Each structure stands twice: as C-alpha cells, then as structure tokens.
Image (cartoon, rainbow, N blue to C red; front, side):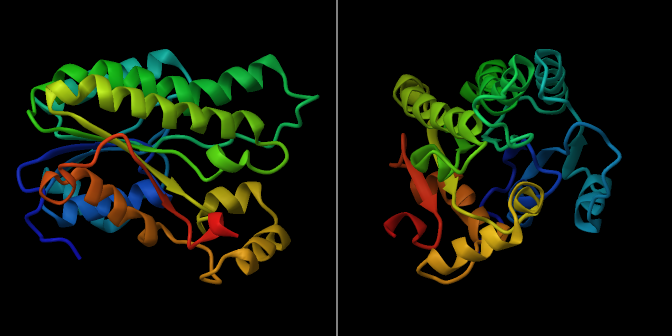
Length: 256
C-alpha cells in the first residue's frame, strides 16, 4: 500500500466516485492524506459508505452531486470545485457509463447525444474549466478513465460508448503534449472487465463467466485492482516521467 502521507496537503478531484472504481480511488487518496472533492453522481440520494461520511465530517472529503449529462451540470460542478479549493493537484475524470445497450440501427439522436455528453464531452468540459487551478499546482496530474473497449470496440450495443472512450484516450495524449510546459502530466487507466455494478446492469452472468474463462488470471477484476494505478499515475515521486500513456488493467485479457 502507498505511504499514508503520499498525497499530504494535496487537493484531489475525483468524478464518478459514488460507487465502483471511482469510490475506491477516492478512498485510497483519502488514506494517503489527500483532501478529496468527491463527485457522488447525479443526485445526493445514494447511500454512501461510512468512511466517506466520516471524512466529510473531518473536512477531508467534500461530497458534491452533479449531473454530467448536461453542460450546465459540469459548469456547476467546476464552480463548486473553485469554491472549495484554491488549486487542484490531481484531477481524476472517471464519470461515465454506457447508459444502455443501443443497437446501431436503433440508436436515437437523443441516446447518442447523452452517451457522448457523459463519456466524452464532460471530460473536455471539466478539464477545460479546471485548467487554471491545475496550472496553479505546478506539478498537477490528470488521470482519465477509458476502457478496454476503446481498443476492442466492445460488445454489441456499446459502439458509441466504446468510441467515446477511444476519444478520451486520444484527447489525453494530445493534452499530455500540450500541457507538459505547465507541469501537468496526463495519463489514462483502461480497466478490463471489472466486477462492479456496471456489468451487473449491462452484462449477463453467462457473458461475464465466458469472459472470466478467457482471462489469463482466470478472474474478473475488482475496483481494488484498479485504484492503485490511479494513485501511481497521480504521484510525481512515482511516475513523474510518465505522461501520455494508457495503462491497461485487465488480468491479461488483451493478450488472448
């Protein structure tokens, strides 16, 4: 595990942190001394774990709901970040989901727009809005969540989701080059098939078992498998010479 003071006095923003990988990422940043602004999803009605509520009470965590399916939602979220922090040392753009499986011939304009807004455009909007605060850090890191489907194309009904993740991967590489003079590193974490409620909603048990058998490590991943890669990429002492990279976390799924 990382040193408990690795992110001492660092300000961290994690979007999509109300559950799954994002929640575990927020937990590990808190365990390492960070102050973490936690995007808890579209509304405040979700049950949150005790560690997060305790950290909120201690003013180490700041819990902020926001709907990223609209530009107004990302703008309001960014404004709240500015009210809480004077600078941002780490931005984790993790918010996103498929919203549904949409066959190519049946995809509506509204479905397309919502998937792109949430998984692609919101990343651009949040990053753009927080850039002045990231530049104020002097050695900030952006870590964006993509997906194994950005390389494979995903499974039927996930074409636009998969393409939006490929956009984020390419966008991140371009940002890494552009923002290097400002001391900002930009990298991605690309999870494989991770056992979270994402797949409980969008994948059948038979499909998940078939996938599990195809993975060299013979198991699906967990949020705990993924989160340390985010911290590694965010920590200058550990990854200060790494930028513009996509780190695959999939148990060997891609080599099969």
